[in-house]
Image 1 (cartoon, rainbow, N blue to C red):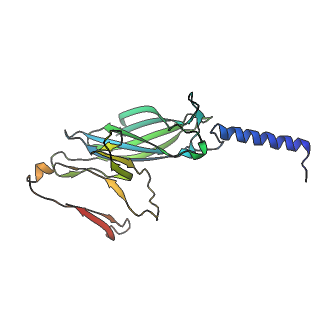
Image 2 (image 1 turned 135 degrees about the vertical axis):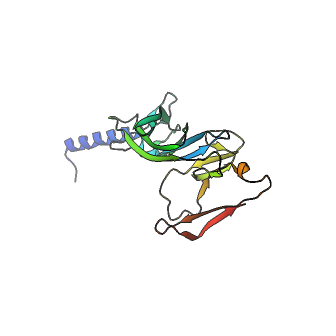
Image 3 (image 1 turned 60 degrees about the vertical axis):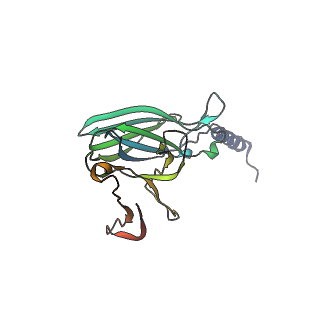
Length: 238
């Protein structure tokens, strides 16, 4: 059934506006989604620090054309560590996405920061704002962070879950011990996940053990309900 002329014009206008929004990489109602994780480590000279891992969901942010003619998203990040209502560290920066030519194929993008902090209990607060959204709508994420690596006894860092890792001769913010460590920044582990990758560090072994003394590192998954080790989910390193 043919539509009246007025309705045809209105529909075409809406179609053109929608197409223009897609071309600009902007869709109304899009909500920024960001995942946050962190782990604490220590340097060879016993200075403890926290690594923060941020994953911005690529299709949750808005893209605009940059001077080079490609699309790019920009997220304003305000990160603070507080302890007993006192700010111990604060920084603000803009995280830019990789440049892309097709916004329908936007991928998640990562950020990693290292913040030197002494032993203690902290609250990590991160405020995210999509700079290409109008009006801007900040979102906030909070985590409790414990830094408790003893510099005099055999100690373990916290573990960093990994999406993947591979040997690397080049250096980047993700490089450690000659490996590129790509963090897995999510609290959800899907049922089809066949392998759980993680990275950790052992400290002060030479202070406690003899030069040729061997030791064993056992790791396993335990039930969140019972606290018992789950059968078939353990391994070890000598």
